[in-house]
Image (cartoon, rainbow, N blue to C red; front, side, top):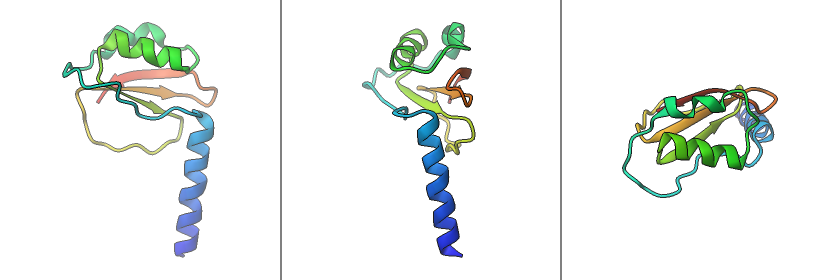
Length: 99
């Protein structure tokens, strides 16, 4: 049973990394400002990229960025300084929110 759980976890993590390859939570430096996701809404529908992440961080003034590939498990902790960018299977931005 433990082997099946471990295998399932490994398969899930492999899928998540292939959907948004190279994308994970980043913190460019503590600026102490709250996230303002409404400012980054014009980025909806665009392809995920390092440049898009940087623009989203600039617009939202967030301290951290978390990419969320479709189907990925994420923690439920709320961080008012974190911007979340949710992606579909084609790595297009479908939702941008703080937390």
